[in-house]
Image (cartoon, rainbow, N blue to C red; front, side, top):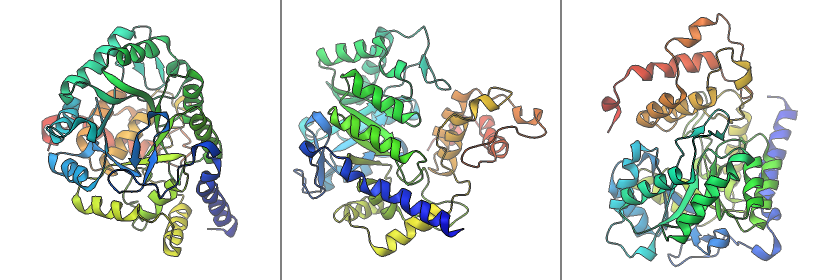
Length: 399
């Protein structure tokens, strides 16, 4: 790696680390604030929720044990989604917290509209506020609760979707009916546009966004995050390890380093982590008690950043879409690949791949792939690899 590349990566890293400077003076979120649990905490925007710096993303959780262990250790915020295990994950999270004081935890979910086109990020003409409200009510029933604390509109990328009248009406009605307390967006790509649209709409309370050391448009993203925070929106970070716990082609990823890197930006209220073991839980809780990065962590972060070859993390930039002659939903296929190989969650990978509507042996039609991936992926190789999952019966993948 050339010295110039090394300097550029370190410069990019410091932009992220200096994100604390973007925090409005009237919303100081000192990292050493503590919530009722005693864990370091930050305010989640205008919600008034003081949440520990690390929270649970339950997508990979398969038993109630880790959720209860996290709760007992002081974790307050737990997130699921309607598309995790066809809704079964929401049932599991609800069962995990059953019988506990309702005001002692915060439950969130991402309710995906059936009528969203993931390739364009736009809602189809079939979308209605009533149909989306039924989605929210389905989550409420699966959780077994009287209300959900936070409901997110997932795959938010376009202003037209974030500010869609039907979405806003559904959220407003659900709030008035007491079915949800706060609303927000979740964004994997197109996040700058989505955050700015959410801030402009005036309806949204929170946003969950991909935020990690491999983000390419970091300076612009930090600017949109600051804009959202100024509008009172609380920011939660996902995909902080760039979608993988270990890069297959490189050294083990220092998870403390990359999560600490995200939390250097004090506009990030909490990292949503896919912890699945008690060991991971204790490691993360120990880590957030001291966010100062050690020399070794800085070296590890730099090493991980310099390994800029193709990995598992897709930027979801969608630059590939117009290049494919067969109009494949490549970003969705790449997320499936990441779920399978990064998160070791073949069931979620199967569902995601199904959403992409991938035809059998579609890449065999091209001798040479015409897609020039911005992340350097061998697109044809990855699609050919993950496409095999389509032929595996779903029952074989369930734990």
